[in-house]
Length: 215
Ligand code: AMP
Picture 1 (cartoon, rainbow, N blue to C red):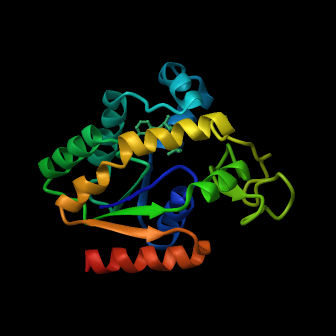
Picture 2: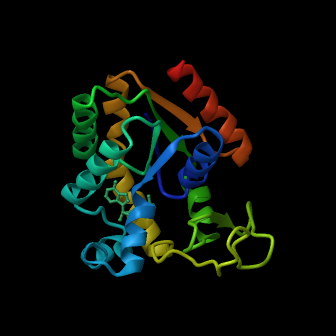
C-alpha cells in the first residue's frame, strides 16, 4: 500500500495513472470518485457538489466510509492512495483500517512544486469526463485539440480549476493536509519528490522510492 499526496496541480493524478498502468497498482482516487458521483447526480453527488465547487474538503465520515469499502474489497491488491487522506483525522482512520486487516502503508510520498507553477499548471489543465485522463495544454496536450486521445470525448476544465477556487484549495492544503508530513515522518515512511521535472522523470523517481520501500 502506497500513498501519494501533495497540493492540487502537482501531478498526483497523472503519476497515479502511470503507476496503475505500469506497476499494477489499484488506484484509489477520492477526487475521481467524488467527481463521478457529482456527474451522475446521485444522492451522494448532490450532497457533496458544493464542497467540490468551493474547494473545501468533503466531510471525513463520507470519505472514510468510501475508503473502508474500497480497502475491504481490494485488500489483497497493491492499493495506491491518490488524494486521500487529506487531513490527520482521515490519516488516523486509514492507519486503523489497515491495521485491522493486518496491512500497512509502506511509503507516503509528498510531491512538491512551487505555487506559481502550480497555478500555471492548473490554468492549463483539462480532463476527460469519460475516462478521467488528465491533459495539460502546455506540457501534455492531446493529439487533437480539446479531444481525449483515448476515448475521443470532449475535454473539460474542472469547475474547481478556477483562480479563486485554486487559491482556496492551496489554502486548504496548507492548513489541513500539510500536517500529514509530520504524521508520516513520525511513522518513518515519509518521502518527498520534486515534481518540476517531466512526467517520466518524476515517474522514475517515484518508482525508485516505492521499490526501495517495498522490496
Ligand atoms: P482532487 O481531484 O484530489 O484535487 O480533489 C478534488 C476535490 O474533491 C477536493 O478539492 C475536495 O473537495 C474533494 N476531495 C478529494 N479527496 C478528498 C478527501 N480525501 N477528503 C475530502 N475531500 C476530498
